[in-house]
Length: 305
Image (cartoon, rainbow, N blue to C red; front, top):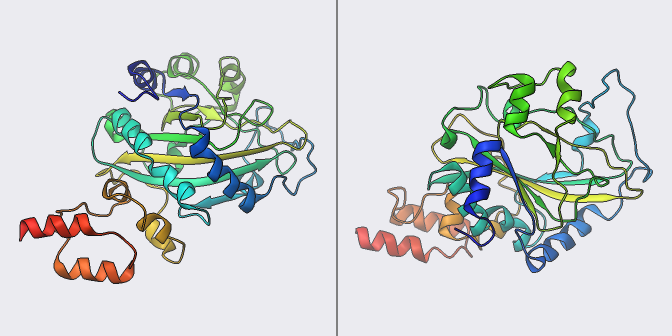
């Protein structure tokens, strides 16, 4: 069991659907990523710096397109640290343990920079499965997902910390197995919500059927840098979000040239020794990615031949 989390954290995720892990990453690991965020997104948004609230007929928050600006998808126009934090060995180990399987795939990784006044970030309680699958959350935990929010900057309630509800509390209000939260139950969920406020380097892990919501930015001139990262079992075709291959023009060399075989396998790249690897495919991949260290793949093929 990693020093960053204990059995009680794994148990809590399974029982209640969410667990907060303060300081999962060190300042040394986060600092270069923070600097990339500053360079890419700046330190202040285009808004007024004062809290923006959108007038709607919904008293408990609503989704707005402006909430989802300042987002980008792996690979990023940043350094190696920014591009490989989604595939950090400790994060992979935790995801594998939570999903109770060895072979996992990264299927979502995106940045999100929020600034006070850019949008009304207050959302209703919801689960993430609606845009991760066309079905519903599976009963088998290994067929679900684990979603992480990595805190690149400190996140307080005044800086829009995510709020979430433990499964027991949600089911008491909505009924067992609920997958939606009607408007008439939103206020009751708010009464039992928990804050995910935590320092930079922290991680909140939650399940595909955990009710949660974004909250508004109220700190004058505030900013919030996070990265959302999601894993599934490698053979689970029922779940998806990003299709990595659609962005072949992006800086994939930051991942390909520096990722280990274990990290690259989480993106669907066959591991050393897989039948995919032949003298031809090895040679072609090396031409496509000339700085990719493919020695482990060559050694595995040599043992087979």
